[in-house]
Length: 281
Ligand code: SAM
Image (cartoon, rainbow, N blue to C red; front, side, top):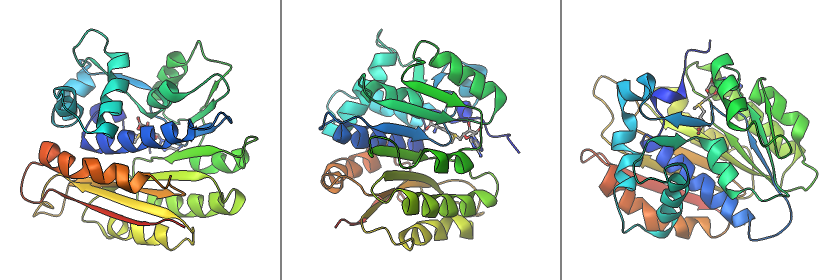
């Protein structure tokens, strides 16, 4: 089932958290010259026009990225996020929202490589178009990202950031994420893996972070940002989280600087808040 289209959600509060963390990971990797691989198991279409019919219908970016875009005084990791958005919006208005592959590309140096997986035919086509002039550094494949990951691990440089960001539309995605991460850690234990997950009432979503922590990685970080109280009827996403295996040692401190700020700016009621847990060896 491929009914999920990220265009409806591009730039929402979950993208703000996910993409701020992603930029932190890659900019940390750039402290060394040694090349890295960025692997995006669920890449989406690359870049989103915010005036499209899909984005306009929900306008989720208005209560997400647009609230960051409109600020001038930003704590450091968010200043980097806003600067990355500005590369796609040079004329001062937020018209385009870069997805994870496009944001990763802002960090890529000549020696780095992007490996992108996307199954939806239209999103895949748009992904290929986005990176048409980058065939040396970027490869896009219309394939199941969960299954394809194993073929890329370990990468030649033994440095990689892997983003696992499925739609979680089907229950099986929760199980696939756990199995995929478990297998990836076994093949390449020193890789940095970032799993995005939704905060929802459903039991699979609530238990996912604990199941990921139980996989036995020596170092991990779990960050959660709730933007509202859990809905009374039990339906709907009220926040999201990122579980990171082998995070940079600086990440907890960098996130502590922005999370209270994000709660204030993106929170919509008194249920807004954050959690940050980590075990860094
Ligand atoms: N990572 C993107 C970003 O942050 O900009 C958003 C990705 S979106 C949450 C999930 C994407 O995964 C959708 O575009 C969907 O079509 C795609 N997808 C769903 N199942 C997939 C699978 N098994 N393998 C690869 N892509 C898949």
